[in-house]
Length: 144
Image (cartoon, rainbow, N blue to C red):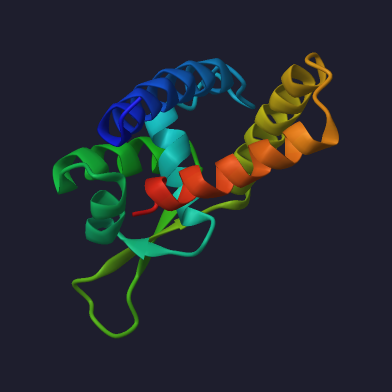
C-alpha cells in the first residue's frame, strides 16, 4: 500500500472508530438533563472561568449560540455569571459546584464504561500500551 493510500485508509479507520466510540460513551451521563453541548461547556469551564466569547470560540459556536447555552446552564444552577473586576462590560462564566459534580460523575461513568469494554477483550499489557500510545497521538491531532 502506498503512503498516501495508507494515510487515507488510516484516517478513515480512525474516523469510524472514533465516532462509534464517542457515540457509545455519550450515552454514559450523570444527568439526563445535560446535553452533549452543555456537558462540553461545563467540562471546558472546569479549568477556570472564561468570558462568553472565548467559550464560544473554544466550542466553535457563535456567541449567540453560546449565550443560549449559558442561559440554560445558569437556569439549571450549573454555571454563574461573574462580572469582571477590571471591566464592567466583561462577564465571565464560572462552573458551580453542581456543574462540577455532573462533570466529575459523567467522566467517571464514561471511564468506567470504557474500562469495562476494554476488559471484555482480554488485551495483553503490550496491546494496552499500544492503545495508550495511540490515544496520545489522537490527542495531539485533536488538540491541533
